[in-house]
Image (cartoon, rainbow, N blue to C red):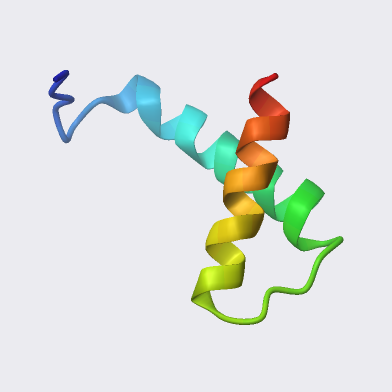
Length: 51
């Protein structure tokens, strides 16, 4: 397991970019109905995005 320090400034921008991409490309096109559905949408989108 890789431990990441809490003060890693280089990772903050990457996390914000990923969250922004998910919001822009996924959640603007689909409506989530509950936590279970949002989990499904993010799992499907990240699978699509990473391939």
